[in-house]
Length: 131
Image 1: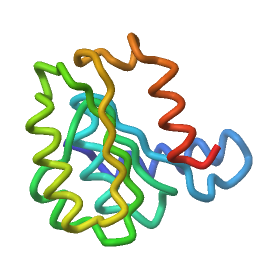
Image 2: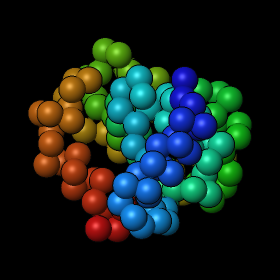
Image 3: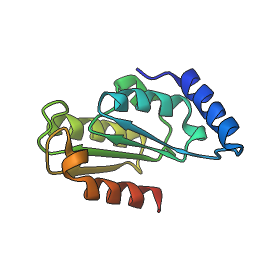
Image 4: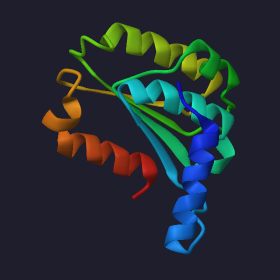
């Protein structure tokens, strides 16, 4: 779940193609990619402005390696059969013990709330990112 070396290569390629450094991009993980995103962010926290997890959550090992200055948004839904809201709340509570600034939010909908609640999702992301 998650490969930091691949992300480093991808960022280097993007900088080469764009001809400009990407000082601190945002990392976003969706569904199963959220698990890998947490692992990548935990090992490369200084490289990113922050991490947004949509419809997913961290593993115990990712939680244990995140620093207190991590900037994380966990955005989950209330009726997600793949990431039940009770599990998301439990993971958020564990994560908050390490990352006091964690932003945890819930939207109504199922696992595909990104589609059904698109405006609310992007509003949450923009607010988190300060855009």
